[in-house]
Length: 140
Image (cartoon, rainbow, N blue to C red):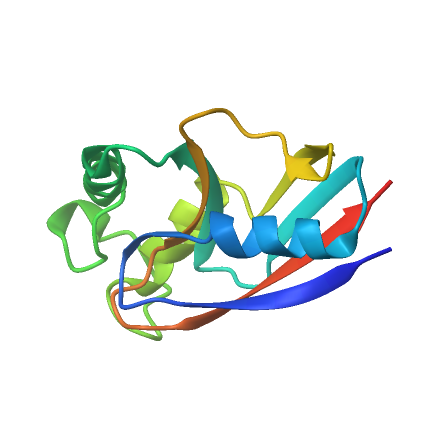
């Protein structure tokens, strides 16, 4: 069963599409049908399948989550204790808990079965750049 690890480099908070790299992995595997599991090995980022046509969707999602869970130095977040790595530390963990760290995507005819406007994104919740490890596992 094919498996690999990708590295997604981020420049700070936001959504980073990596659909192309995943499609290339599936093509190179030679498997025609199966289930691709995508798993991110971190606790302060997550994965999303989301629209990849209009960049306003990504901006609005990022804004929504920033308003939903502001930095811990915001007055509404005074209750936060875990701030070891700065004011975005615990909010990043909360955002990751509200979203997915693993996604299953069907594969048919050697391709991801995504909708026309769907793309696969790493959702970075930290403000500084990171190198995130994403495991891809394709099974029958």
